[in-house]
Image 1 (tube, rainbow over the protein chains, first blue to last red):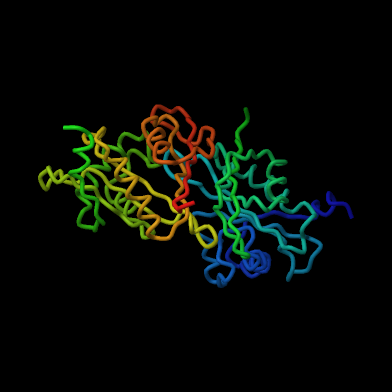
Image 2 (tube, rainbow over the protein chains, first blue to last red):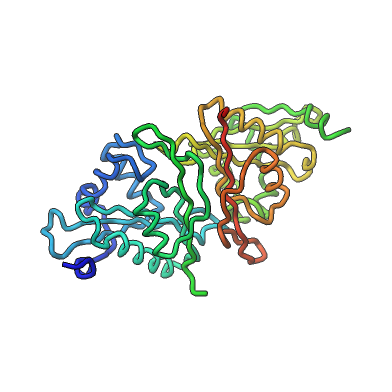
Length: 177
Length: 177
C-alpha cells in the first residue's frame, strides 16, 4: 500500500467526548514519551483529557476506515484561538498521531484539514508556539505544509534526559493572497 | 527632578485584590487605547480584573511614594509560567504604566524587578509572546533590558484603525551564564 492510498482510507471528523478512549490510546504514548508536547510525561488521564478537551479547543479525530472500532482513531488535532481580542485572528493547533500509524500521511492530512478549518472559521493565520527543535520529522512536515520558522526560543524545552533544547515558533497565513 | 530620582521614589511590592481600583486606573486607559495588549478595547472592568488577576499570575504594583493614596499606584506587572511541564521554566510577564507616569523609568524598574523575581522563582528564561511592532518605545526598552527579538509574527495584531501589524516574540535568559 502506498502512503497515498493509506491516507485515502482516513476520515477526519469532529470529535465528541465519547471519543476520548480512542484519543487517549493515541495521546498516551506521546505524553509518556515526553519529547514533543509541553506536558509532564507522568500526566494522568484526567488531566490529559482536560488539556485535550479544554473549553477553548475544537477537536477533530482521524479514523482509519480499515481498522476495527478499538483502533479506528489513529490521530487527533485541536484548533483554538492563539490569543484574544485584536490577536484572536491567529489560531493555534496541535496534532497527535498514534506511533503505530506514523509514516502514512496522517499528520499531513490532519494539518491540511486544520488549515482548511482555520480558513472556514475566519482565522487569518496559524501559529505553533513550541515546536521542539529536535523533532525533525515535525519541523520538516510543517515547513512542507507552508509554515515558516519565525524564530527559535533558546533552551525553552527540557527533554526527559534533562537536556534543554530550543523550541521553534512557526507561522503561516491561512488566507488567500 | 531627573528620571533617576523619580524612580528612586518607587516602591514595588506584591499586589493584593484590594489594589484593584488603583491598578484599573492604570490599566483602563491602556485597554481603551487598544494599541499594546491583545484585549478588546471595550473590555469591561470585571473581565479586565479577571485577566490581570488570573489564577496563574502573580501581581506586583509600583507605588510612587510622593503621590497621595488615590494615585499612588503608577504601574503594575504580572509574572506567570509561559507554558507547562517541560517548558514551565520559561516565564511570561506583562507590564502597565499609567500614561501620566511615562518617561520616568517606571517600566524599566518593573522589568528589572520582574527579571529578578523570575530568577528568585527559579525560572531560566522570560518570554514576551506578543510585543506589538509599532510600540517602538516598548521594543527599544525590552532590548535595552536584554531581550532579543526572536522573530516577527506577520500581521498578528489588529490595531484599532484596522491595520494588521506584526507582533514580536522577545526572549531573554534569566540565569547567570
